Length: 115
Length: 114
Image (tube, rainbow over all chains, first blue to last red):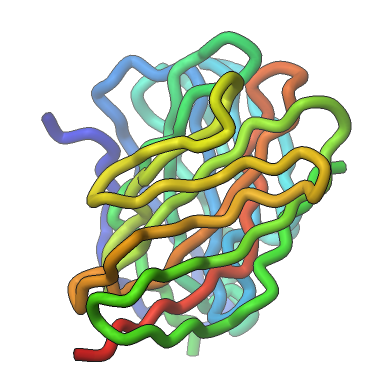
């Protein structure tokens, strides 16, 4: 079982460059999420999706975009990279459950450095 | 809006001793509460959750957590710590209304000393 797969694992970007962080899951989960993790700050939600064609902003969406054209894939796009976007990015997914009592499954993360 | 507080950035415990990692939450209604563990350079791994029922929840690797509604707490515990338990631990909460995203605490780094 692959679970949640993120690519790439590491990336260095120059200021102003753009890139897409890929995330795919093979568990047929409806819900998918993007978080960023900064030291001492825990995980902050960037965007999430409750199903194909539906996305919504989280706590820190500025500078990012997402799309959800299929159940499996939930790419995160950085259009104009800034040093403040240096972070570790985690994608997660969860199945629908009664009232939300299902746990989320996480990918291994993408470590992004913007210089 | 829901929130989670983990008051300790770091917890140190000797191997074989009991450990407690603290978590308090704020949410409207009955919460769904989760604990995750993160080892270095890895993603988060699910440990246990509280949905309803028994206030003492048992999870993976011998961990358990106690839900206390009056104190709005969900502390993670283990009777006897192992060096291999050293990791970063996150508490998370989800509101009961639909499958809203998990809201995480800042994390507590557990160090178990041999």
